[in-house]
Image 1: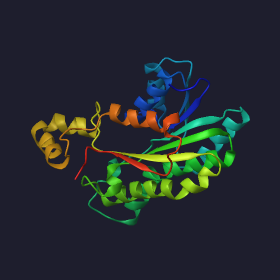
Image 2 (image 1 turned 45 degrees about the vertical axis):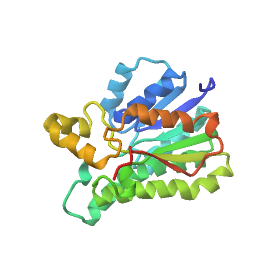
Image 3 (image 1 turned 90 degrees about the horizontal axis):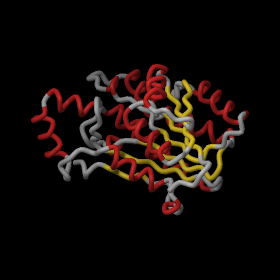
Image 4 (image 1 turned 135 degrees about the vertical axis):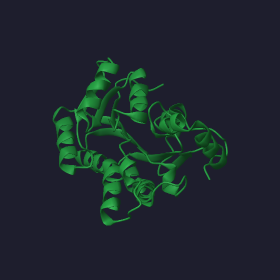
Length: 248
């Protein structure tokens, strides 16, 4: 149970896992602000979730100037954030054979700075109360699952960042932790499409590479999110929780 009058800022909350995290906060009566760069997805989100407690802001999280503008706006309105969820990321453009500078740069822009920018900007603006930060990384950060090197390095850096800044943030009464999901199965996502294309091959892959021989679900992730923002986890910071079914 989340206390009343709390506010969550969900970065990348208009698609995939982000939508489920957004719905989780709204179900718990938490005023939720969603930041995302795709205007159409934000409009679809508002049509799909009819709630007065949902607010959406168009923002490219990879661009510090846009993020800074949003944080200044929140400060002017005296909106103090209690929960910051950094979920934005994209590995679609990183599945390239060519390992050049641009490939690595794009991976970090989409999967590292989309989390670092809102975290640093929010902290500098000081418009937060007992802030709890959850960064959604990936099991690829442990170089598991056969993901491209550029994507894996970006996610690994994200996990390391959370661990490195946790002591500094603790002095400001901020807890920061990360979650590394495994192979998430969700409607219309990458694994959903793979099953649709070749169910036998995909299931065989999961059975071979995941000890529990099943996909990760959004419910599995939400259970961990719920724990990390709860009072029961008040003594936990700077850790990464793998939710991967023991991926090889």
